[in-house]
Image (cartoon, rainbow, N blue to C red; front, side, top):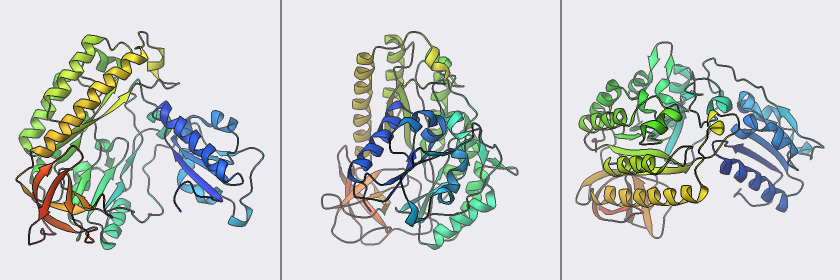
Length: 411
């Protein structure tokens, strides 16, 4: 049922990356209890792992399940006829998370044309601002046969595009197989037409991966590579293991190998010690590099991380101003990315539903494309000629023939 409707049970899979994410989780619990005061509230995910003491103090929570036991959550839920409020929450959580390679016992049905395929979890990098190593544990990889089974099942259901997900997917290593080996095995699955990489750390983007992206008929020419800062001093304080120039050289190499690459990034604003000169370095790099977009995150001090103890905290008003500057730049970058495709003809995989009279889909390099149409195009691939663009999306019209469904040209 849609969120906000009366319910007997709420299972909330939480995030703890920022303070805002935790605040949103608490708000959703209060909102649910307002319209369904007898609802059984189960909280899992990263906030359940890193903040169980605080959650236990919030009224109305009945079950807290940390990430070690997250996949077993259904076994901890009472039967439907015994979903009664508890005097205090039952907690299933361990301080540490087992580092062994893993498999997923059950596969959910995808609710979009792009299905996520989790291949990795955890992170051992220990960036000074990040709670993920504490929330998700050390790096570990999913068993190769297990993830291939799920991918085959998704393709059999008609899924055309899968997105490889994980906390640090470039560190995938299972029985000698790395990320490129996973991709090459996935390419052999009949019916699977696109393989997309989600966010990947710059230090794990190898020449082999770029060469594979350039030559593959299925691996999407798209990379989301977090920058975080364009200032070397801030990158060092963040415990990021690259310099600004090393990042630039990686992007140049990626664009040379995959010329029509779709490129996104993450940028953090207001990290302790970020003065005007440091922000100017970030702004310059964000301006000069050909990003299609970037996500801008104000620094959020997380208890337990090294950054909490750093001096020279940035004034919140200054953080807000810098965030607005970069957000405006991202909007301009997105419009420029859309404009660059005017006049091109490209395959588009359409998503479910209609938006303001348009059917909307995505190209291999992550260009959002809208076509005026009332026809049902969900999960169909069509060749579209781009004729106009806005910040929201590129606009086009279909050619007579649909796109080929076995080999997608790299864009």
